[in-house]
Length: 621
Image 1: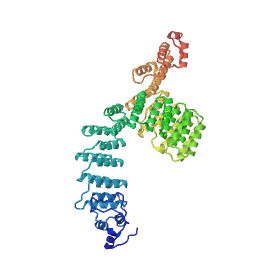
Image 2: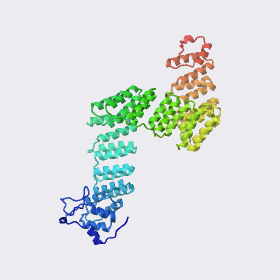
Image 3: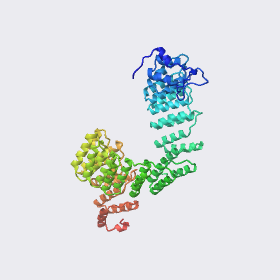
Image 4: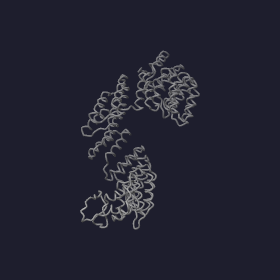
């Protein structure tokens, strides 16, 4: 920038007030300019003063111009200068200078004008410093200014500082309104501090002059829904209606989600009807919740008809709703309808995204469609300019593995690496498992080592798969080493890892070690599932004889994890091998009464050994 040196009298002349008789009409006032007929001393903050701020910044020349233009330094002038399109440093210098003038003191309006200006320029450190000066100063702050400060600090992730300012200002006899409390509550919601929301609500109610409104209830109900405190959310919903407040579409949608989650489908549908009666228009989010809930409840046709009704009512679907409905149809063996829905998206100006394509590809594999169709959709996806995600590759790799196209899956893993995607444990897990089933243990181990090198400690599930296959091929010591390695690396073994190692130990007939690992599992806070119990039961049945196996079986009957068909068949085989055919026959009666099917091979051996099977009224299923 070239600066022109001007003498003081030239500057004064440059910004001299025009004589009204000269007919000079060149000065164009700024919108919302400073000045009014009620204040004869004031002059319009026009282009003349803005020019000097742009050329000379803030300094003696600008001060001189203020004198010449006879602009009185007061709150209105400060606010107007802070709106001018000049460098932010000029504004802050002027703000500081004005604060030192006699007979002038910044008030909440000038502070807020500067805070907005600094926030707009993302000068967040200066924003906080200015807020501190404002709070420490003597200017009174009202609920509206406090609400705005909380919103600004919340938006720039200064949540604790926002709370600190809220309580400081509140302590100085500023009475927060419902709007002020809502600003704090919404900020806490945004940052995931859901527990604190309830504290604010209780504090608000105890004020005596400030009562929750629809915004408050909406935030609270959402918070309780996220905390899985469903009863509290439902109670608040009833409370707000008792207080004469009309629920919004968002509140209805949240409550519908809660009822669907609790399996109370009719009550969720009742809320949707209530919305209609109260003339509360459902939004696309409401329809999404309704369709998702109906789909999870197995009411697929109703979900599809809800979509049709939504279109008829003129509510435009978004990509999230369409993805949910495509997923529901795909999982329900309605692949044609899912693809038809995909084609409708373009007619509805609703562009498919990567999730849409992933859903279709996953549905194709689940419907046992030819793998070439999945490949075709993958190519179509890329042709349409949709960039595949790591999840896309995982779906394809898993699908090709399950259809015995391991080489194709390996090529996709390479492509995934070439595209720069980080190693995906799920994709490796599918491949390692498939290679293990094919008894290509060394290749599986190579992939496992590659995954560890690329992303440190692998996931517990991948470890479990490798442990399982090492156990299957008789390399139990390697399986044990892997189990110990994952613990050392801080990758906590899950139930699958424990089950995989226990299965290997059973194969190696090391039953005492199985039993002790089962106990260690419980001690380490990993809850055994029915498979864990069946693995131990199988080990006892194979090597410990019927006595120990029956003891565990009886314990299972009296525990939270009850025996299933596998448990009964394990004991049935054990009794048969021990020649305890009468006991076996009784157990078969018990199985039949509980709806379990018995193993036909074991059943045949018992039929040969015992001629009195008919007395037990056994009917082959």
